[in-house]
Image 1 (cartoon, rainbow, N blue to C red):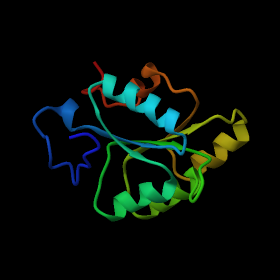
Image 2 (tube, one colour):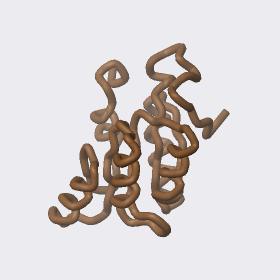
Image 3 (spheres, rainbow, N blue to C red):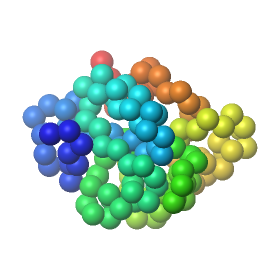
Length: 138
């Protein structure tokens, strides 16, 4: 049952760790694969989107996620625009901006779009674990 979207957190409520789902939003196939591997190694479920519009559409269609890893620069809809739209829709998920850009001013602009945090690529296992609630972060 890979890539199964949990709607309203109602599926797989058996263990806290297993019901936690992460949305990886990135246009780069390799980055999505690496992030998927990191997230699943923590025992979490993963859904992927190739751009911000796909992420917004998933939410419009009733999906919900505990954590969103949002790339900044993507075609169709970039990370800051998607983040603004998700926040305007009332999405309360933790949204982490992920970018290859190291300029502080760029990070600041992305954070102002509604991020909880902004980090530079590549993500590490420790970084992802630090964004999890303590009950999921052994």
